[in-house]
Length: 374
Image 1 (cartoon, rainbow, N blue to C red):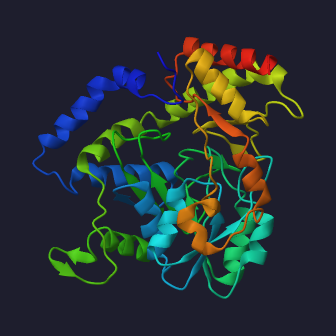
Image 2: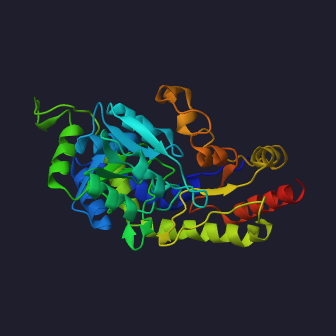
């Protein structure tokens, strides 16, 4: 049987009764769209983060897009972000009509190099969009200072960092507005698509609620454009309400998996060899994915698949600025050297809180065999 980097069936087996009860709760409620489950989840998710407002939306991509639009980002504006991210981050920027502007990442933690941001700011810059990647937070203090100095919106992409903290502050509470995805693989995952936007601003929250509902504030009457049909589904919201109560346990489970990898692989690390994830100072990592690095990445992945039927993932094999869909942005090869170099070497080991220890030990043993026979 093939081993994959993620699977939900062990978790579903353990939580099946509660998940099915959530579905029945919605179907028995008499309200299937923007009902008590969505409003309840919004309140509880906001409380978890210590933020005033939460607006549930249909997916993480639209969470980023609507967050930007709520902050006034649109055609002619620029948004500074990174290319080492899931493409939807940049698709969302493009969807507002704004232009993404990339800075490079740090080789030690693969996060935005905040030292490069000031030089990227132009009169057209409207927002800074740090991506809290792989389960830990970008260093926010320099970005907060730059946003204040230049009058920019600070928009957190938290799709991969539910529950992560930076110097005690939780991801999603540090910027003007924050976008989350609840895609099934996420630290807090639904059983389908879902997303949310957090903000402490009453004005931004009101804008978000219009944006997700056709530009309306009451039925059938459009107040302001743009508008979208981007509502969080009631069933997914009720499932997320139940799972939110277990989020800290999921995080503990991910950290336990990470510790087992470190214990099983630490002696194989070193210059020119395997590099395990590094947690940056002040960060509390939640390990959305467990990204390692090796100069012979492709050979390792091929050997694991052919000899052990272990199928691994690369997050991400193509930096966004190198994709054909974004060639119009004009980034030449070599323009983001750290991002491009890492894309040739990084890969992800299986990571989810219900990963059986015996299966993880099989992966560790296979990887050890491959690394010692390269």
